[in-house]
Amino acid sequence: KRSNSECSLFPHEQFWILSKRIVTPDGVISGAVEVRGGNIASVIEGDDLQSSVIGGHFLDYGDAVVMPGLVDVHAHLDEPGKTEWEGFSTGTRAAAAGGLTTLIDMPLNSVPSTVSVETLRLKVEASKEKLHVDVGFWGGLVPENAFNESALDSLMEAGALGLKAFMCPSGINDFPMSNSTHIKEGLVALAKYNRPLLVHAELVPDSHSSTQLNDGISDVRSYATYLKTRPASWEEAAIRDLQSAMQETRVGGHAEGAHLHIVHLSDARASLELIKDAKSSGASLSVETCPHYLAFSSDDIKDGDTRFKCAPPIRDEDNRQNLWNALLEGHIDLVSSDHSPSAPELKLFGEGDFMRAWGGISSLQFVLPVTWSYGLKHGITLTQLSKWWSERPAKLAGQDQKVPLIFKLMSNFTLKHNKPETLQVLNTL
Ligand SMILES: NC(=O)NC(NC(N)=O)C(=O)[O-]
Ligand SMILES: [Zn+2]
Ligand SMILES: [Zn+2]
Figure 1: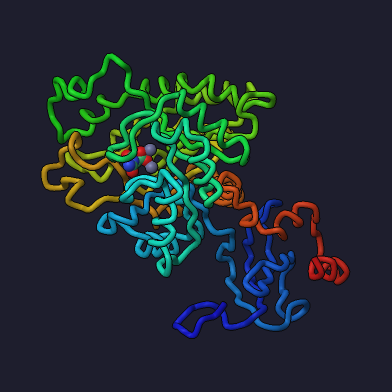
Figure 2: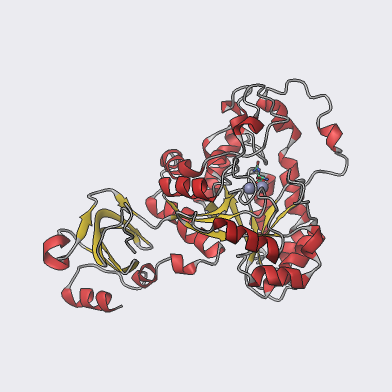
């Protein structure tokens, strides 16, 4: 609704958006999108629609792309508590600047972490009057609530869209790691709601104590040093450890109805093979990767440039190509930002110490151009981009209404010509 502020919304209850490139489930069409009362009312294929069909108010965007807004299922907005790291106001403005119209906020890096109905309410309260795009919330699965089904139920019934767990230390004191037993419990609780459990899948082998991790560390400014401390075998070990939990999400399984989603996959070798096997065995399983894994390889990262520190780490060029192939072949389902900013001083830009800097990449407003620019070299299409960044993330977050009804209906109508009767049908839909 147009407010009397300097809002840029077109001041009409009903208007049309024309473009030569409108992204629909049936491909990219030239035509017009009808907006009525703030919703998509119809989509019409055809050229020169101004005069013949539409009349009224319209915005003609020429050959600029018109597509569903991006839905980011993995963003750390850090409020309440750490607004010097991000916050709802700056984070949602960055999202809007980058074409993201929905963010699902992670349950950690805020203070407190979102691991109960009380802390979810604190977060919702903190977000009031600060949102420039839609925001939803994942709840946190931690050892403290994993066996307390009623606590998980109240978190879900209070509006959490699913749960998130870490299988390794998260770097946040009040968000401890979980094991596969906790995860199985979480999946059983989620089965009632047909909702997902998202997992940070890195598992530190028992032999590794945290001190050992830093043993023999030579040059902390070299990215290779950091990369060596978080090998792909950690991702593989976590996904191997999740196998039986994944099997329980199959039809007839103990957690049928629940869904397991692996966040920010970096290892496109053994870990990806295990995911592919689990999917083909019928597990209700999906996996995301992030633009920084698709765009950069370890060789690109200069000494001391701790902007690129994240967990799991950015791996080598061959791995990056494998990630693109897996995304193009549908083995990786979607892309998310894993926007994990911090106060600049925590990145230790001066010292460039990869071992002590905050792990997390700040990227929200760049994810669309990065995915598109680097994807062009792999021949990606706008339709694929929209599946990876809008349609599938919206489904994971249970936001099916974000995949506009008309686009769903469009999948039944193969509009060849905007014959009046067809238009009439669409308009009444
Ligand atoms: N607490 C975090 O924000 N962690 C994040 N940090 C990264 N990815 O380096 C994450 O998603 O694991
Ligand atoms: Zn993570
Ligand atoms: Zn994250």
